[in-house]
Image (tube, rainbow, N blue to C red; front, top):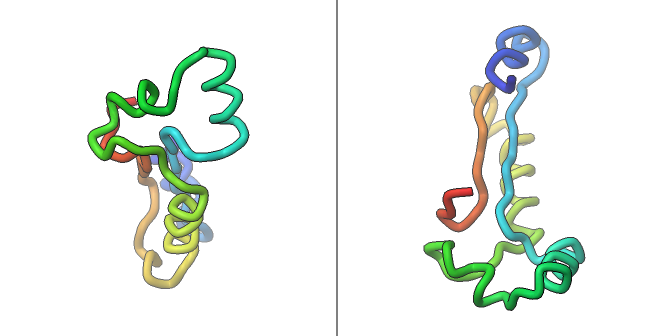
Length: 85
């Protein structure tokens, strides 16, 4: 869908998708509570063995919005510490 939207509207705007993994937010706190898992259990499948920070996601968003990414469109960016989903 991201590729198709970028092809359709790419003349005027850049379209990219961001797919975050476990990010240290109140939503993650609820997941840990409701699923009754510890953070250690939650990140066991992440090669970096930690959750991400909102600032790390914001840095990606800021880069994509910057002139440095002016030719980047139609992509999906996983920000998940190397996790597989």
